[in-house]
Image (cartoon, rainbow, N blue to C red; front, side, top):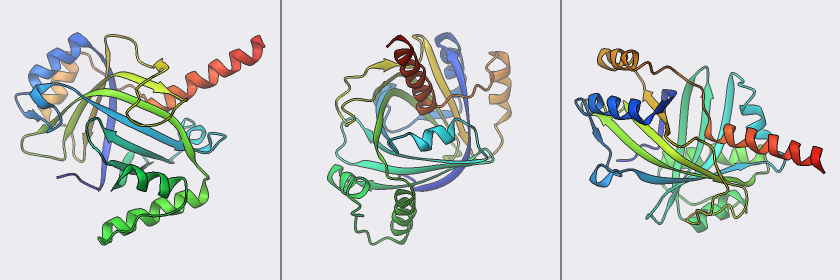
Length: 241
């Protein structure tokens, strides 16, 4: 069952294919693939990040403030609906609140200011939080980011989750779902973003394996990396004009 509100610590690492394969052998002793990994294969996640025309939200985020927030829509390939998520980070702790929407409801809410009607209390609260953000910032769809994901859950602790992402494709034109006519790949071939998501300390077996494979934390934001590359390219274009 999907969770629609949670807080946890998320740490990222950049790993090679050989590191991923060795770590995966250990993970499968304690963890299992999530339901989207049909046949133990990756699945594609699509995201649309919303921001102001002058990129206020991402500009604030990459300055690494104590508190930051993002608004994005997420859709799994092959599904009809999407999640609209408000993601907050304060003192290293990540909080997410999200609701399920049809694609028509998504545009009505974010672009036209027409919130969806929901009966559940938690849905109403999330809608109010997103409305508050939309009132502060006049956002538009700014960036599409998709990637292939392999995800695992601990067999005894469903709050403990590990993911591997690669083929991270982005675009700033035609920012819509299900049209992966991407413009940029923001991660080198053969590398993966490993993300460990937990509300508790890491188990000892994982700490030992990370140390053995020389896997160390590495700050990486998909949207942040995309924006920095976009900003640098724009600056070069102006200089060469």
